[in-house]
Length: 114
Length: 113
Image (cartoon, rainbow over all chains, first blue to last red; front, side):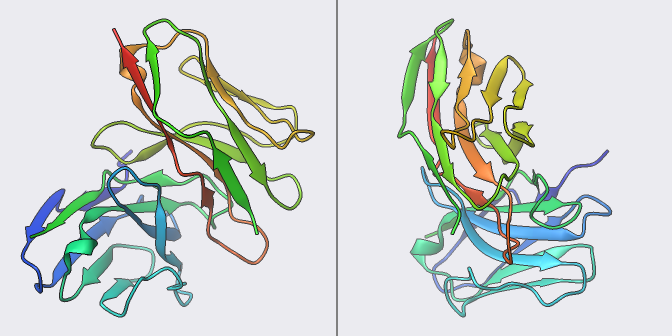
């Protein structure tokens, strides 16, 4: 079946512009995570959605970052007034239940802020 | 809280060499344990897992045994290939009141022909 998809695959933007990243989870997966991966680094948790519950936003690095998810479908991560330190790969993952399960990752969006 | 410690990389090997990537963890109880692999330009994908003590997870020639006495889950492969070049992440699932999994920092493997 279809895996997790993300778009765009690459995004180059100028400092100060807003960007929107999209994630399509696997159908039926109730949990959805966003991570940031800087070059050569590990995963940095950003935000977690579980069904219709309030999201866990504890990993968002600043108020320039926000994310939405409608029910158990698509999620968008928005970064306002981008800065050069926002340059990274943004990974989305979904899982059938909570984080107790294995995660299924998308290919990521590579964001470059010039 | 939970934590995962992986050996520093990069690990550089010649083709057909033996591979070990060490992983130790700190967690409450006896959680499942995972190894994920990230090939260049891709997202992470599950490589193998073990759900209880003494279980051995295996896939694509890789193996890892859940050792509760040493709280370790070392990844091994008897004969690596160039195509195994990737970053490998050891991970714990969420536990307790948190729904956030714990990932190690990743170990880069470079295999030369």
